[in-house]
Length: 123
Image (cartoon, rainbow, N blue to C red; front, side, top):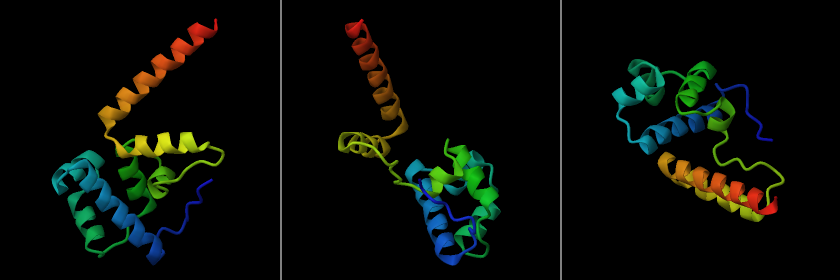
């Protein structure tokens, strides 16, 4: 299981968190106003975090993560792969993470249809 450090104010953790926040904003293609609106975190707070004037709190990181359907742990542990997965499962997860939300929805629908077809075939 991914271990999340509780002391988010530790400098090395803080740098990773700020980089992760910036990456999320860039990946979503949002300017600062859009990102602030989506996450419900004020622009002044984001500018302060980005400028390293203040460190992100657990509450702020949780709020940002939640706005994009992630838990605090998922946000902090990007790339985490649960133990016990086969190589094929790891590959599927890696590809799934690399595509956009619409493509993920298509993949999920396809998997649902495949599972239903296999169940019907086995009955």
